[in-house]
Structure formats: structure tokens, C-alpha cells
Length: 168
Image (cartoon, rainbow, N blue to C red):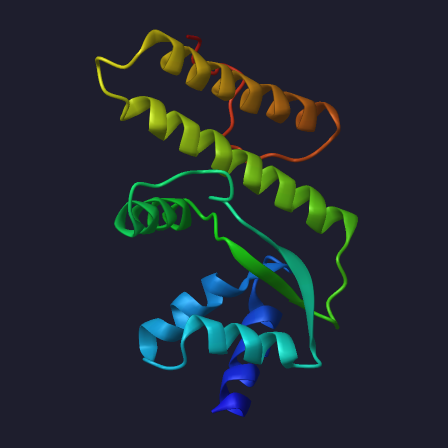
């Protein structure tokens, strides 16, 4: 199975628009069609392949506290639904990481971050504390400022982004 798995991962990484890909994102797709292996075995197999380069990782719940494992699992599922995967990231050694790729990646991530913050504001309870709401609005404004600075730096952001953003 290792050869089938690693060949599948290499094919995935060759076809993927993103050069750097979270292992868990690939595992979710692989695991949706097959029951084996576990994420841990999948990760170890991928990282051991000489064609693949470890690009570090992310831990999106590093400083968060959860009351129970179910709450943490729900948080992780919400993050993954928004495109944020914790864990190691990899790329094919044969694919070059270019400045254009990094610019597109930053643009996509800033778009996703702003969308997640706006979604959080829309689903915020009516009786939320003013300080909490203010902190979320400030985060949205900081995300928009980042997008403005990216535009000024010459990055091509999605056509969906508009100059007439809602004011709070």
C-alpha cells in the first residue's frame, strides 16, 4: 500500500494549485475513499518519501483551551471547513516555490481569513458582550487593512474583493 499511497500523494501534489499542502487535507481525501491508514501512519509514510519535502506545520489550536475533546474536534472541523488545517505541510521537491506562488497563497489566505471573520460576526449571538463584538470588528478591520496593503504591494486579489466594503 505504501507505493500506492505515495504515488497517489505525488500525483496529488503535481496537480494541486497550491504547491505547499497540509498532509491532513490530502489524508481527508484519501481516507474518504479508503479506511486505512490512520492519519499518523499516512503522515509518516508521506514524510518518509524522498520525493517529498517537509515544509513545517501549523497548530491552529495551540493556545486555546477546550472543555472536552468533542469541543476541540468541533473547532478543528470548523477550521478545516474554512481551509485551515493543523499539522505538517509538504511539497514536491521537484516543484519550485516561486514569488508568484507565495503572493497567490498570501492573497488566498487573507481572503479566507476575512471570510471566516465575517462569518463569525454574522453568527454572533445578539446578546454578545460589546467588548467581544468590538474585538471581532477590530479583527475584521485589520484583515481588510492587510488586504489593502497587499493591493498596494501589487498583489492581484480576487475580483470578489471590493473597495466598497461594509463599514461598521
